Length: 294
Image (cartoon, rainbow, N blue to C red; front, side, top):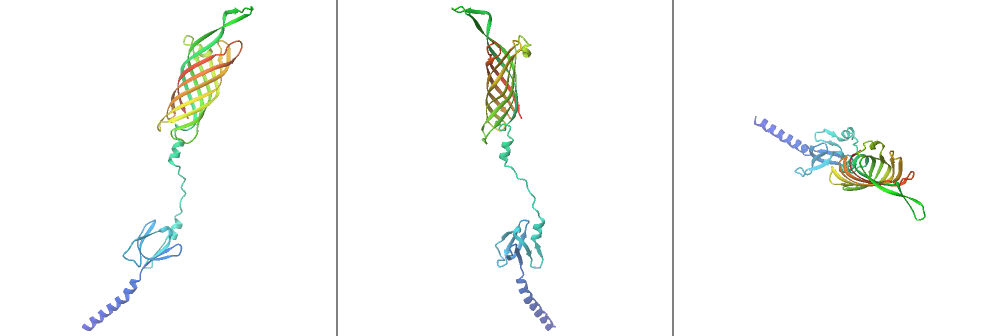
């Protein structure tokens, strides 16, 4: 009985001596796409990397390798992971280019952006007119008849409509210069003692007056505009049968709150040519304006 036990112990020792060398050489093999093989012990696999230890350094350190550079991993038990197949199935999707948020902000900035605008104006206007007074004439020393002109000044309540476009240039964040064109400005005048004057009384009409525009930005919502335009003007007074051609100048200051602007506007119209024997009119007008930019 003792002999049999000893024989079993001998067989067990022989079995251990045979199996231990085989286990000692068991290892994982990491195969890279370029064919390089790394004998290792794989510790962890994530979607983007593999953590492992070199087979010759079983106690560490831990190393990392990207899964995108691997072809396959063959494990010590004969199983394997094929990373090339996984990569072929993962077709990268095209991502639309994303604009710089700062550039997008500039493009959509209601203060700094160009655009079409419309303004309504109400204010006070003074008309200076020189006419030949009835019966006002003298004779010079040579007996020639000379008519004497008389200067009259009239006050009106002014109502105006202005349509135009602004273009700003450059990439400055706090101040931008630009160009402004007033495509149309219509001034109508009301004599408070004669309501019909709004229809048959004097009017000024300007087309395509052009000039400079400036915007000074205080913050994302508020800014200040400084503008100046000039160009030809036509004056009409149906009540007196007058027609003038002259030049208009119009500086303005506007406080802008995003797309809405409230401002102070000065306009001077100097008549140059008139029909008949009339003298050209001169207008001085100051108005409050309110409008929007689109």
